[in-house]
Image 1 (tube, rainbow, N blue to C red):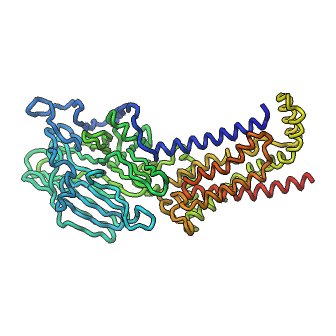
Image 2 (cartoon, helix red, strand yellow):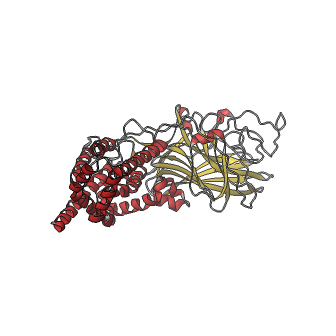
Image 3 (tube, rainbow, N blue to C red):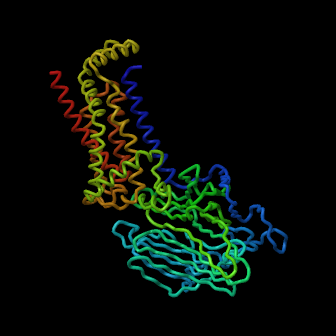
Length: 577
């Protein structure tokens, strides 16, 4: 096969792989939801050597019999709350978590901090709405991001409580009392306490907010004033539907990935699509651990107490929504004693450094895909540059300089080979004319010529092939790193993570691509020449829909490559003159 044919095939394969990976990864996480999913194999419980934690769900067989009017058959129930050990009855439908919360505003407690605006339903003490004041929905807009919410067409709430033999959430959610309907926290920490008292037991739910942190501590206090032992388990879960929020800044309204994630002893980051839970409940026991719901730049996560064995689960509820959370170990409160259990709830941006501090592997919810090993160092280098220059666009430009400097030896060898190829093209054309009827002889003569002149016909493909993984890794950095969300550059570019609405960068990229072709030797094969001429147009059209930051990287990369190639070509021409 002639070397020009090999070059064409390599180039087309490289472009095909690049296009396939981009389209596949984008549609997996940002495209429409799948119509069907393969069966999901339920994860087995892991033997930790401790007493097992039992979390039972409606419709599943239980090894624990419970008394009811019909033997061990459980009555009809709303299944928002998992049933703990020996839970005798079910919560009533009319007291389901957050039911009608915003139709009963008198039940809501409103807490405002610099980082959170929270509404807590006193029925059950669930967080039924949460806004992030430091993040706007649109660039320059006044409307802030609403992460947790409960509406007639959407639900995403954070629930917690006590279940089990004596748990207050096993027989209908308790209605807590609060000292006030609204609290404002300007600095430091603030603790909100909700109380529910009966003749025998006093329950308290404490929320600790920090004015500068997205982490909320939730504690359940029990004061047992009865003559009997109190026995319960804490549960904490995120309840959400599977709808994805629309995302502006990218054409055709692609929707960010929404799904669950866990950490397990076998898998530091186990990402589960909601559709996979339609075919079975996910269960795993983890010491400490966390369960999260991902939503593009933001994450909500319940974090279990370190050192405790918690039963984590993900499942589909009877109402079509999904629950992701855990049930903690059983605890016992003797008569006239008190006890406290708790968990932590993170609701906020995917700040890698902060998430890493909260729990092991929680930072992996910033999902850079299969090139994470390249994306992570790229992000930290980019972040370090930004800390100095203060502009993410300038940081991308300087990062491009660093990458080009790192790859300069390879690029230099490639451009030297291309310059030599340009020099031998007249001889190649003469060989093609001489051996037009003998392709094997033509191939042998051309390879001998390339070897004699030190030219490599595949050298021109090397820069593109080398840049592909960097291109993909930076692509995921730009669309997954919340630090670049709505990050401005200059003039018309207000969001580097969104497309260039005026198409200036893609057009400049196309011009730079065409200019690079002028420095390259013209392909001897007519079909290959047509393909090469079409490439600037194809890539310009493709890059119109990419984040502006990514196009900026590629544009600067092309400009630097132009300078490198021009300089090296001149040196080769002078040396051979």
